[in-house]
Length: 122
Image 1 (cartoon, rainbow, N blue to C red):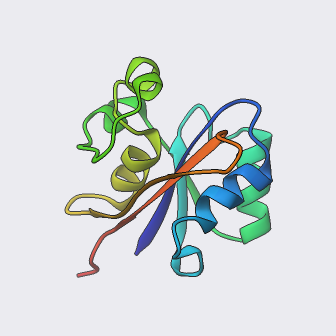
Image 2 (cartoon, one colour):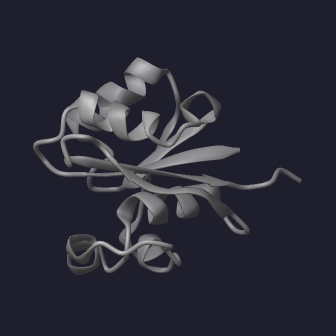
């Protein structure tokens, strides 16, 4: 299973999220979308979920901070106690044994990030 994890600012648009996803280069292989639990019900994230027709998961902050990320954003570290919300959300939602496929990619407008993680089935 491939999970796309997202981090985004309040002013992000669906186009921002889609652009970040597209920058991963594997958008068509994604099977689940994930972000922080408090962002999962935002209008922007829900619109992306609807547009892509994929299931989504909001990840608890404790699970996010437990993840080892490959990149570090100072704002994410301060706000979320993780180096990258996108990477942490993807890894946590993919579950135990997940590995990062694509480190966070930043949308052109700088409003959203997306990373991909994979858990091998079985």
